[in-house]
Length: 447
Ligand SMILES: Nc1ncnc2c1ncn2[C@@H]1O[C@H](COP(=O)(O)OP(=O)(O)OP(=O)(O)O)[C@@H](O)[C@H]1O
Image 1 (cartoon, rainbow, N blue to C red):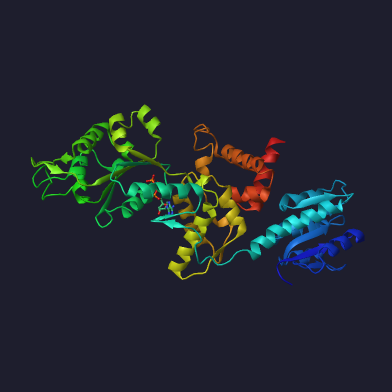
Image 2 (image 1 turned 90 degrees about the vertical axis):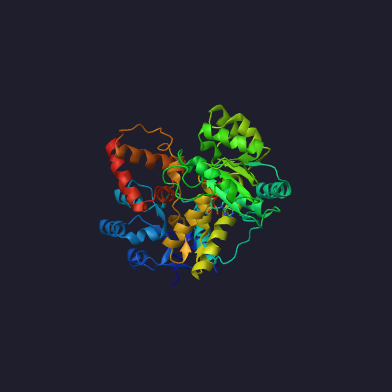
């Protein structure tokens, strides 16, 4: 018996026949548990993908065996009963995230529910294929086939032929540095250096030296001449990342070089000429950066001769799945592996809002690659949900009890997922069983 078969224990003969008829000859096959065979034992073998079970004669002992066995959670359950209040069935429902149909049975609804459950299970079992190749187009170092990316490629191609300054704008992790590097590679400067510095990470004392260099003896510790990035990138491209994080007084110095093309190394009187093309980048919207005084207006106009907006990942449609496959294919190739990705995992990727953009996706796939043995499933994808949550936005006051935060997270996740406990447990990063235990606890407290 394969693990995709259905266990049937339906006492209502007509319903049983209709289910069997609907699945005659189709995958997965049905196994009708003959009475008085112990259907509980059969179910707990964990060999069934789905179980449709009539429960009216459920005994306390059977209920306990089911509730105690983790195998119950491996099987999707559809329970049928007469509908009389039955604490044993209630207890079972608390342990398994199953459906419960009460008499009179609506055959259509039950068949539809079975179909739904099977569609998901079959998709997960049959669709994962080894991901060994990427289907996305690539321009320079940028991967993606979506419309906004194609528009970006066209703009980069146009800008590669001219020597103007460019300001690359986009959220963190969208690929701004890759855009700058691609622009460099597509330009006549491609044989010269591409030098990147993070303006936000430069220490204020060393910033002049980093940008313009220094001569031996210029200050304590300057044991030899040092070439600044303007000189290192001569003839090539200088990428100034996070330019809005540079202190305003240093932005003036940068502006002077951009205007005059001249600079002097610290401790030297010799004027040097800047021969690098400047591409700057920022995570902030320029209008806001100007309003918040993080960016000098004159520098902005100098840098943004051509502003290039890089779209966030959530606006790139099927590139999300395409990039996930791309990163997986490369990882498979590097590690000589043949790992696959399940449809449920791809669905989870599509539902996510990607606050950390492509960087977050790349990390999520790399972490999942390590966690999954053969097939990456939804549970292997640890996404930065917390960035979206009220906790990160400061909606949770400091000093709030951790239990209250947990209760809030659980109820909010259930609410947002239409009460789907499996999905909620997955998003919360706990097992369905743990979710039930926690619900039981919190519900008791509020009763
Ligand atoms: N279109 C893409 N194709 C392939 N990889 C990408 C793409 N965009 C981004 N990446 C990858 O995502 C990661 C982040 O990219 P990058 O550093 O260029 O982003 P960024 O916008 O400059 O980030 P930050 O604002 O934090 O500096 C890198 O590992 C990069 O290789």
